[in-house]
Amino acid sequence: MKNKFWLMLAVVGLIVCNVVNVKADSEGYTFENETQRDTSGSSTGELDETDMQVAGNKVYYLWHQYDGAFMQMWMAYADLDGSDFVAVQLTTGGMDSMYGQLEIVGEKIYYIYGRMIGRWEIHTATSNLDGSNFSPTQQTFNDGYRNYYGMQLDVYEDKIYYTFSCDYPNWPIYTATSNLDGSGWSATIRAVSQYWWTRPLLVVDDSKIYYVWPLSDGANYQIWTSESDLDGSNFSTVKRTTSLYNKTRINFILDGTKLYYAYIENDGTNDQIWTAEMNTNGTNWVATKQTNNSYDHGRPVLMLYDSKIYYNYTETDGTNYQIWMAHSELNGTNFTSEKISGSLFSKVNPLFWVDETMASYFWNELHGTEYHVFTANGNYQMIIDEGTTVTASVPSLLTFSIDGVTAGNACANSGGNASVTTTSSTIPFGTYTGAQTKIACQTLTVSTNATDGYVVTVQQDQDLTSAGNDVIAKFSGTYALPTTWSSPPGSGTNSYFGFTTDDTDYSAFQANKYSQITANNTSYNVTIETQPVADEANVISYQLEVNNLQAAGVYTNTVMYIATATF
Image (cartoon, helix red, strand yellow):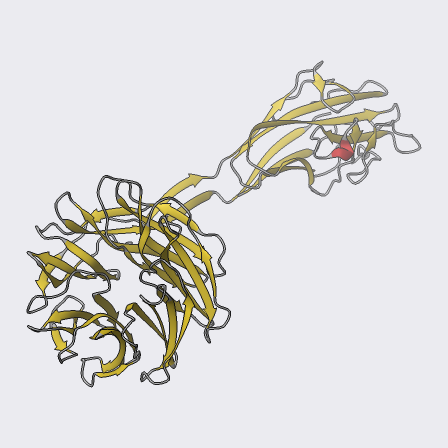
């Protein structure tokens, strides 16, 4: 009998193209148009002496400036590039007004600042965006013993929320609220310590107020966080750090369910920049040291933009403090910094704002014995660009080979050795003389980089059929229930043809069990793998048995293997 063999390969997904979008950072900044903005001797360079906010297409600034006798509050506004700068004096009179903060909501600016009336008293105010209609309200009236410091505000809906500290008695921390016009002021002492609480901060969201401040534990300043409901209830405080060095000059921001912090911590020799993150529910405080050099650093400020955190701080160059910019991932990794100023004057209390094309800066600068306020702008080239696309084309790989087996060699899982020699394209069972059974086999080898592997199927176009239309009968075992080989029973069934596989993924075939093969090109899985493979080999065996009553003739058919990879 003559057997013809045909090979068909079917490949799913010939080309795989992996596209990785890489957000690329390009280092380098421009720091341009440095301009002194006050007109006379200005601040002392202390903390909280300036503030800055961007709203719409304008930058708004706040500082205090000497009028020849007293410090007065000033505001200014300018285009984002610093042009069209307009300054407005807000306070007048024979008292110092200092330490201002502002927040812009809608068409109004809201302020908090200190005014020296025997002691530092808290004042709040509102104005239009151009500084007109400045309307102040004195909120504290002490008995001559207290000074209020570190005033902060956050406007949320129809309320203003505040926090501040005091120097009597025992350095308490306060929180307060008022209406938008400053009326309805209500303040509450939240914590009292024999040690000085430095500048407290707050941020408000839909249902909570979050606070942070440094407090000495008697040896070093540590970081404490608090939270409360909007009405001030459920106020709680947690000490977040315990190490042996001072932590000071903290700033923080809120984004969704995360709070991000930047602060100064001394390492025993120098003041270094640290960052931290924490969930808003108070869990998972994680702090990271970001600088580790032999220079001191000044107060960091931070903002979030396009899924990164950007920082502005000062670092001494050995003579003067210069302004540095940095950015990191949200978890503090990949912190990258660069010095952006280089003048011969020390800079303190830097503030900044960035978007994808522009940066604005505001700081105090020491000239001789006086501090002045300066602004600058530039192209913030460390901002993430639009994305660099890296492409790699990985062609699909599927190789499928069929090798013959020489007579006398084992045919795995067939129950015997090869009776005849096969090739890659023929299975020549040869001539049967009387009742006889023969085994023939081939080795199928597959390699593929397909993610989900491959499958090989076998099918035949017809039963083994002679020119006289006599056929070799299908073996009695089925694909669903293969059986060990048995001889044809006679009584009209004088021959059997069947197949088996040694692939152990098809356990029903193991221990030398065979299945019939249907004549209508029905495909049967014979080897399979669910992941990429290299040179995986399996043996497919065929057994053909006839008795003395099988009709004479030359019997042929065509068997096809189909290898399919799933990418």
